[in-house]
Amino acid sequence: MRFTRKRFCSFLGFLYCLFSFYAAYSVFFKPSQLYRVHRVVTKKEGGSRGTLYPGNDEWNPWEEEGKSEKDLLLKKRKKNLKNLLFQESQRQPAELSVQIWGKAAIGHYLWEHILGGSLEPIDAKAQWREGKLRTGKTDLSFITGPAVVPGYFSVEAENVVLVLNGREDAKISFAAQWLHYTRTLVENHKLQHVAAVLLGNEQCNNDWIRPYLKKHGGFLDLLFVVYDSTWINEDDVFQWPLGVATYRNFPVVEPSWSMVRDSRPYLCNFLGTVYSNSSRESLVNVISKAGLDKLCWISAREQWQPQETNESYKSYHDALLQSDLTLSPVGINTECYRIYEACAYGSVPVVEDVMTPGNCGNCTLYSNAPMQLLKSTGAPFIFIKSWKELPDILQKEKNLSLQEKVQRRKRLLEWYRQFKIRMKQTFIQALEKAFQPND
Image (cartoon, rainbow, N blue to C red; front, side, top):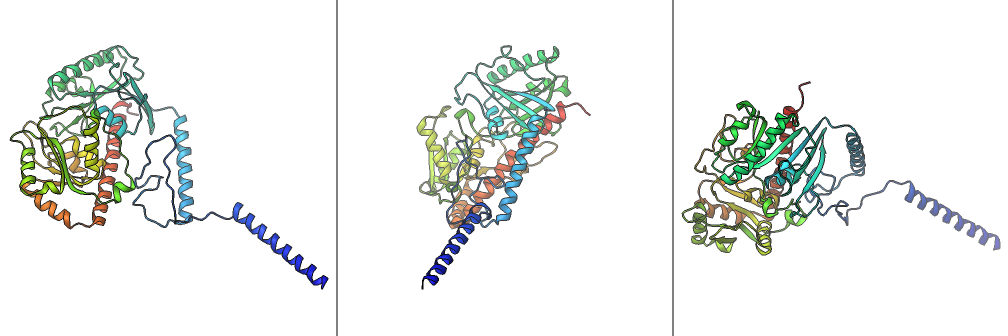
């Protein structure tokens, strides 16, 4: 009996050792498995926004489920290789260095929204703000703020991009001061190449800047101009998007799960100034007569307000986030900030596709003005010729399922992401072609 007990105890000891070896193998050697019952998504360290776009390394809300362990491992290796290549590229000297002088609010859209740069200090009211980034083999720096004035700062590059406002006479006079200062630097051989990003006149009356273009005897190698200028040739003159109202502190918005997936309580929204005998007045009348004000977030005012209050800022962003559609009537020009701001929140712009008076129109490359830049990139908007079409559009909206709306939001957000990437590539490639020597 004693012998049997001894053998039994030995057997238990053997099982204990076997289990210990298996546990050690599971912890240290066995490949980890991904269980999808619960997932925790964390934001990148040092950032206040997580990114949820397709193609990025972060998880996104429309990503297909069920990636295999092998795919995850391959993705991790690619990420590590990408990081190594990026670090190596940072060690290599830049082939081109460009300094951007942001003397108009659209410079912030270029730097933060298109190029993905950041600014220090963070305070938007600071007198001097700057940032740096590397894209490919090109170093870019950006300086802006009231303290940046001609002749009172160090020009740290031989190549410069001026961001200017030419919307009205007072702005043109200020822009001309910067152009004259820049021309002096070119004549004194302190600058080699200069380009300009111009917030053009809403009626495309931009003749004042033509003499500054190199092909007209000036010194500007390139011009990126907002609105449908007939000058666009994608050689030395490019069309540039108006973007969001950065002067109202519209932020860089990253999609979230709720933005994409949640049901929105309003079919549409319109918050803005309504002028007498305008398209906006027609829009409000159509909404009122059709009783659509109960389905949409409508807040019309009679007088334009250049600055946001905390209340109006929150109300506007909430309206974009809680509406399936954003109504965009024409103003002095068809293109407006509202279009891009709606895209940022996944609210489909309903755009009045009508040419406004002035000198804007088709160029030699495109015959689809207005908004030829957006149309040429396949913007997934709803284009209309009259607000009388709105009741039928909203009736169709009522019949759409949440899943159909979710898929539409995905397409809009992805299009806007790709649009900004495309504009970044256009900007960088144009600079590299014009500013670098012909090897």
